[in-house]
Length: 198
Picture 1 (cartoon, rainbow, N blue to C red):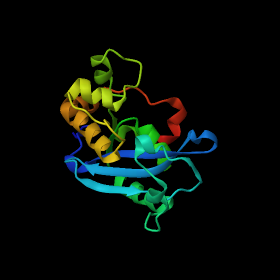
Picture 2: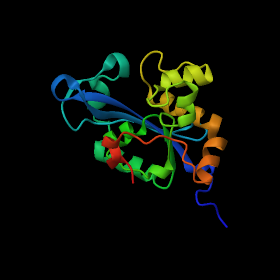
Picture 3: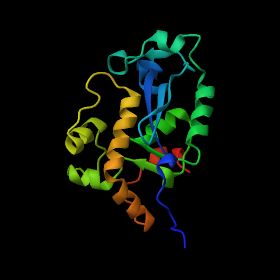
Picture 4: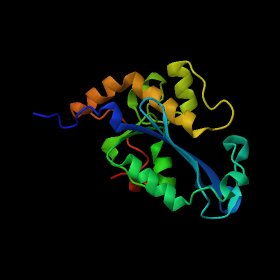
């Protein structure tokens, strides 16, 4: 008899990370500006800027490295085009990332919760850092669990996707083993983002 949740093969796993700019008063509302998808080996499948759908009030350049020229270039694809491309890429895949609800929210793409592996929600990581009830940043997870720096300068979505993937790979046997026997090893994402999951 087949397992209820079979261990996904490496070709079924992708990692996702997005970088946002700010829109609206004070630039506090996030809007997608760049999205990256990598495969299980960390090879880049997609890395693109996204043409803004609203006027950008804060490019957050100091942390994102994004400037108006990146988004307003005639070569920058439209949001709907990128959204459809990402939706096609991740359909039927297991999605790895950090705080995936933020990425899925700005993309406007829901994904089956059972097909997500969010390193921000993985309970053993939280327990290892003695923070069982709070989201731990990717930079902190990488430093404490892998003795590796990430996000030292500006945010880079390819680097972030690879970092989340590396964290997942270190525990994938345990993570998938728990799921296979119906013991989900992760916390729930924030309830305000429930629309991001199927």
